[in-house]
Image (cartoon, rainbow, N blue to C red; front, side, top):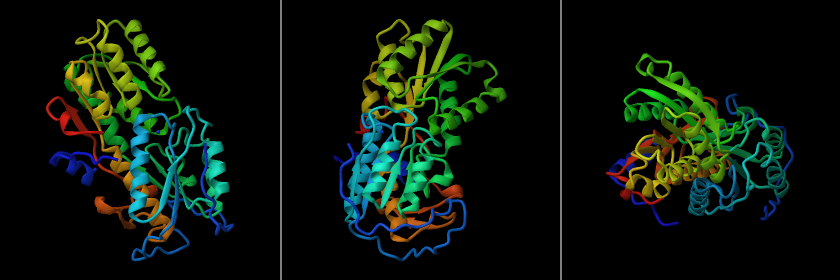
Length: 357
């Protein structure tokens, strides 16, 4: 992939900050399911162990036609080449709760060293992931977590609390902390979205936002057309709506597309989580003033190195362990096996042309 043009701010972000085929591993052995990441692991980590060569990794996004997840996965696939491993992306074309299960089962049968998953539903994928772990396959969730007992690590793009609260703060500044607002989410079961929304709702209880009212949480199912239609529905149902937060790259770009060609342009504020290439035209035409995200390439890169470190025995997933993630430097595992990439970054007209992803 073409390297991202990084400014100094983006560099700080990266350092502080969706048809199964393939090979079958010949050395898969049957073993008891590994302990949850939050428990003390039976095996001891060897931080000085070299990364194994020839590792087989598979990225399983929420859906393969999600532009954001494609960026993440492609970066992880490229990262695997740095440590002489092989990685691929497989997954469903829809983001339903059960759509990933058959892919997990197939990857388990193929005997990959690690499965990296952005879970559509934290619990629906738990059983199949535990079966994979019982066969010695490491499981790393990224972007959207699986239940902690069903994976070894979670690579979180940013602190969930910071994402949720910062989205409210961003919108509040743009609407003068007054008016009715709505949230356009992805699927109703998306772990990351629901966690962020919980913190958004909590942030809104603070005195600073006493004049802001959340009137609706709508779901576009990470589908472009449904998100477009849901935006239209929100604006028609709530004529006094002042702002919309869409913490999903599919949703925010679809909402921007609708607003840009409607009478609501310049009247209803839209923000959320999007990629610069998706949102550039809407920032430049005045539909969106500011939005946020992290570097999705770094998220995939970090997930890839974390999986390699697990398989190679450098880490077990226990809190306090550290590992080296290539160009992103040393990372520390936090509580419940969570590794945080870094804080969100705000994009606007003054800086958006400095980014290409």
